[in-house]
Image (cartoon, rainbow, N blue to C red; front, side):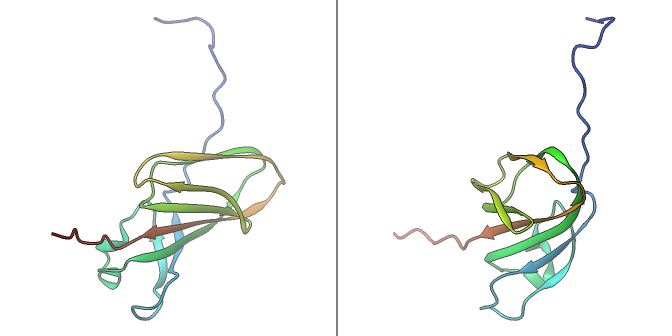
Length: 127
């Protein structure tokens, strides 16, 4: 049906996954820390320097925003902790399912967004 009036106002939205993020591993028991620029979304297991890595890693970038903001994630494997300016704003468990966080009254300017992901080793079934 075509309407001759606006049924709602569209909110301003920006895609932040299409730019480079700072990536680093957080557990170095299996070797040296890996630190690089990464496109998001990505599968770190597909990178030769990350093959077989199980543990925690961090994606970080600065975002410019203010007021009320909703961050929407399409999916993170397996767990995620999201920080804004080093303050935990949301935790999520359940690989590859969407989740979001609403931030109210953010001050004008740049904010540091960090997403800490955890991909744990699956334990083999016992027979």
